[in-house]
Length: 433
Image 1: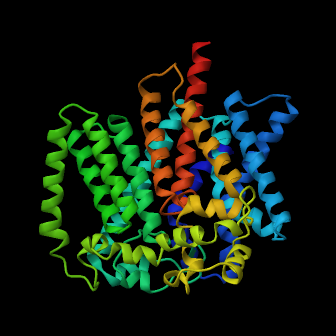
Image 2: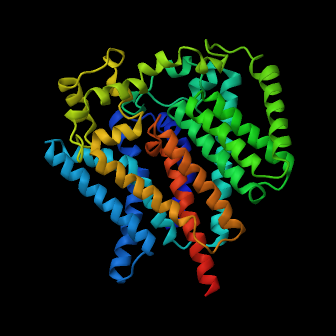
Image 3: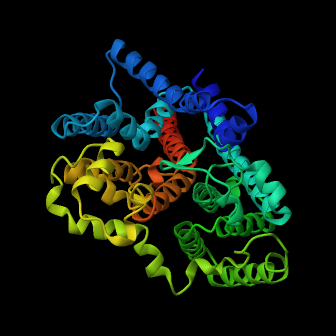
């Protein structure tokens, strides 16, 4: 049962917004169906947890540490809501968004996944990335009609911001997901999966480099600045680790330049942003003052008004109301503080849960990192380790710019692959015994 549900979610999640849009359901129905993937994951976790308790069995010591951290975060969320007179229910819902898919580590570890299932799952994730990438590029070349067909429904939102036709007019691509930035990070994850596993996924070198360029192009066309920079860094990092790395990176850069000169810049589409180099223009600081940099100013100006240990609670509505009522808000952020409250995610964690919450999150991520430096390694586990380490770096950096831990199409697949690694190592340990 566990395997079937996880395989279903791997296929369903990238197309979730597209499916819900074409079902033609009400906003209430949309909201309810959006909870199904989360509820399935939580259900599977409690099934496994209950079976462990009934069998008087424990997880591995490292997994126990992660569980303790999650339990302390849950307690902190409740205490912070009580202390600030915020809604416990809303706090728990918002808290769930950032930790829900971490439970996949335990689910996959305790599942009946065999080595063949692990390979199938990795290939399926890669295949879903290819499908989304082709949809993205198809949308870019075909323009408005394709973008409108694949766009999410009017009930879709991102960080509390409703989807609108502006996202289509802007010219960014998003596959079948709700926002370009989510699509960009999903493409980045599949790119790092390909770079980590290489011949495990693709045997032919020419096809391998074609898909490296393919995913890089999709990240760039998503126009997510952070994802673009991290994708380029990942390519440089992985390429220079290999033999003849400098030659390879030079060839790919030349091919990429030719692609954009002769194809991308030559295609006429109804977008004012056909030249996506605008995202690095000289007005970047001014733009950021109306977004993430504005949130930094807000936090610095009102630092003393936030409980250092408990924050203001995970109830986002309560936090926004508190900011509007009691904080000195920078003029650049005056009319749209709600839109960017979570974009600088580490700062939003301070708003929600104080220093205590940030420390617990770092302990959790470090516990996962510690698992990747164990001594008994082989060729496949090293590929997992490379993927996990780089994506932990992505999470640490991107969380200064986006709420990446809450992006379903990134968070789900990252924690699933971490779970596959733990499961793989468990199988290897059992085989040795």
